Every structure is written in structure tokens, then in C-alpha cells.
Image 1 (tube, rainbow, N blue to C red):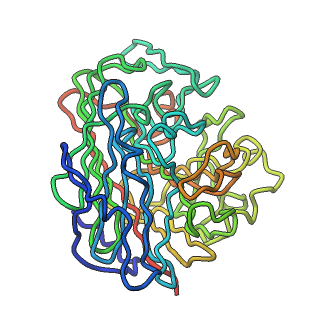
Image 2 (image 1 turned 90 degrees about the horizontal axis):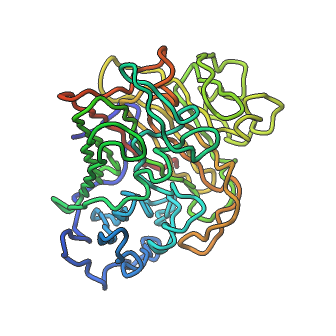
Length: 395
């Protein structure tokens, strides 16, 4: 699978070499902190021992992907989560652009449960924790009162996935979500494949099947700071979102059902704009979300396959993140609820608006909104969607 949007000015190169193995194989401990003759290429990975644990009777571990220019992505199978991602900045310095924690126990006990996680069964919110399929109402846990958020009390971010590494640049997470787990019908078999390519793409391939009609909306919840984890505010990053419209929300962050134009509002990111330029404007939607925490209706620029959803640029690092997807929506979250309660890998606190998220998705509350694209999955059908994070540098 290769993603090559014409708009991308892809950097960096090369084949991928193995740092981590699966199924009992070990990471070469001597290589978990790597460098070459230039200190700009130094990468400090978390200590693997902090991720070797047992949760719910299943072993957890750290999985590291690396290409020969030292771009690295670290994952844990607890929550199928991205722990850190190191890419070069405009000066060639390796920069960790994904915030995370140092041990699996810290993730388990974090006041922010979604750092880097694979999200399911249903990413985003479902109103009042209820939806109806074929005349039967299903009731979910209310974990974001008065609604359900990101799957419920124990979404996919809190389970231990089965992990394999079929080759040196790919990690595959599998999970069976059993019938009525968190209130969702059907035995849902999920496979998520993360691939680090030789042109600095972190690709995400989501596949699911069910034996009973259900709803599915999978995504990744990486929190980014393109100046580097713990480097301060993200409000001076620039962001462009390829969307003419968005879905306004009520005071509980459930879409009203309307799809409205971004033109003339603080939600117009059709041109690259500083994230914080309008975040404090007197606008009802910003008040409802305490900033940006909304779904944009993406403008597809080709009829099928991948298209560019958004591009963010670190104001200090020059690192450019482009998000490409097959999904109709993108949730932009500006870190409004970060409260300095957790300590990142490098020692900094998760202070207010020091990271942001760009979550590819179907729309929030789609099971209760007939006008939104459907998230229903039927037996015999396959849920399959792909997205990618693509990195380059603005000189």
C-alpha cells in the first residue's frame, strides 16, 4: 500500500530496519537509544522494561519501527497506541512529535486515557449513550456525561491487543470485541496495521468484521506537538483543513444535525492559519467546545481513495504533518482539556493546549443522525478504511 498525494513534497528515503520483534522476540536493549556521529540524529526511546507488564492477564510490550535514516515510531499493545514518533526537523534534529508516557502503568492510570490510542468501537460521541438498530435500542456506558465517548468505559484504548510484526516496518494489532462488550452488538474482529514507510509515512489500515449488525468508527488518537513533546503551546502552529463545512455541536458536544459552512467563522481553516489566531473569539461553538473540538466535513478532491484532509506545520521546527484519509470527517481537537495532570516522556507536564489531535473519522453520533454517512456494519461485509500521517520539512 502506497500513498502518494500529488501535493506532497516527500522527504527522506530508504529501507526500514528492524528494532523490535514480536511474539517473545526481544528488542536489542543496546539499540533502544540510537545515535550516529551527529547528535542531531539522536533518538531517546522509552525504556522497554517499563512496557513489559501484564494487564487483564495479557502481556504488554513495546514495539519499535525504524527506517535507516533513524525515523522511528514506538507502539505498545496496551490500547494499540503510538507512544512516540521521531522525525527530523528543519535542522535535521530528531524530534518526538507525538506526546506519550514512559510506562504502560502510567498510560493505565492516566487522567487522559486516549494518548496515542487506537479508538473503538466507536470513535467520538454517541448522544445519551443510546442508538437503535432494526428497531432494537442499545444502551452504552455514559463516560462523558451525558454521552458515550470513544467506545465507553473500557474502549479499545484500555484493552491489550494481540501484536505481531510481520516485517521490520509493520506492527499489526488484533482484537476480538465480544458481543455486547460495552453494550455494542456483535462479535467484532478488528485488525489495525501500522506501517512506517521509506518516505516518512505512518500508514494506518483498519479492518473489522462482525457476526451481528453493529456500528463501527475506528481512528487513531495521537496527540501532536510538531515542535516536540513538551515544547509548549501549539497555538502558533499553522493548520489548514480541506473542508468547506463542519458539524456544529450543542453544549454537550453532540452534533445538532446541521452541516454549516466554515466561511466567516473561526472554523475556516481553508487557508493555513495559526491554531490560536481565533480560538478565543466570542463564538458559541468555541464556547461549547472550550475551543476547537469539532468535526469538519472534508472536501474530497478525488472520487475514490486517498485525499488530503489537513496539513499542520510546527512554527519552530518547520516539521510538516499532512493527514491523508478515505474518511468523510476529521475531528480537530486543540488540547482544551489538558490539565497538567500527567508527565510526558521527557518530563514536561501535559499543560493546556500543548498538543492537538487530527482524528480521521465518520461523523460523531452518526447512529442517531440519519443524514450523516452511515457507520452500520452488517455480517458478511467488511469495514475497511485507511489513513496516514505524512511528514516533511518546510525549509
